[in-house]
Image (cartoon, rainbow, N blue to C red; front, side):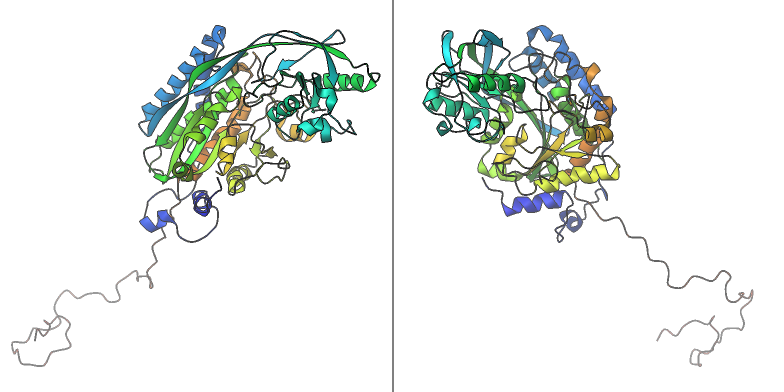
Length: 538
């Protein structure tokens, strides 16, 4: 769905970005704010909510913390609802939806008797029984050193007859993991290994998601760059007609779970001009998910409370969303956007996403919608107005003398569904599995060569390992963005004009105590020059 002109106008007006012309706030005489503020949102306010979310998660440590389908997630939903309802400023809705959940049994892959460290891809199919003595094959490509070209396996034509009934090795890059599995399946592959292309983190295992189930798809696992590259070398070195042989087992079971998004919209404001902010509330079953993404969820709660306490009502409606099932493929946010009619989509003028703002080896990142720091990936269409939304954050950070960098605008988090619907999007991000550079360490501190979040998707993603310094930076920036999109600025009252002639200090003439002359008794007589006489009434 393409972005309409009226949406673009609404975004620029709401953000105070110059198109000039008519201002609704000035025209109606709304005595609103004359400048945008962070509404007093602080890191301490965020941490209060984050502690509550952490306590909920850890109390359900034996039941999958706050993951999809767990009691911990439902309790977190209830906490969000209760917090919002207590403000009295929002209409709160719990949106239920069903999602297919997946659990894994035995996952084992060996090549020529050597066991490989692999991770099953989300939404992969399993093996009905262990596969033995599979030939190991590659996509067709002339140069495997560039991590590009045909070795990426984005189309069935990237494979030849050697893929039939084989375990194929495919590099990460260019297209989605689901497209790679589909291409290998169409080429007749029996199984797929996807290997990471991040040479800066060569031992990092690839945690891939296919996005959705591939019908009769080849079972798929991910592995690290080092393991994949070593396997590549062995395959290329195998004698012609004597391929490497592999054993492959992947046990998985699908179940259907009911889960929820929480949607809250201000009672005040223009409901045909909705500015939206979101964060996913679910976590992974491996840990309490305090940074990922308790931190973004807590920041939204603190911002909602601050908005409810503002002295004047917001001009534009503000809508907050806490998403479910993000960790299994952005399911909640996708379901929400797809549930909106075309008319309802057109009312959503912007979307801001906050997925992790307390990483221990943090960066101060904005979604780089103009590609100035990180090139826009191929195939990603950035909705018009997204650059202006990013500028809300970069301008704010400039006023604080806070260094910041652009991060990849790739649709990796919950803004993807909004972006695909043509809704301008931006957001903030403190880093996940990326590696800290020397430049980033110079600007933000931390350890070069380590992940931005060393506890990402781990049991150690606890409140003790959240960076309060990072939270302190991001919290007011989020509050500022909510205020900026929520309020049209009013003009400051003009000072009163000074009198044209300053008054004299003493009177020009001292009044007399007695009248200067007696009044005349002749009503027909000519008026005197005496100012004490009565005026002529005729």
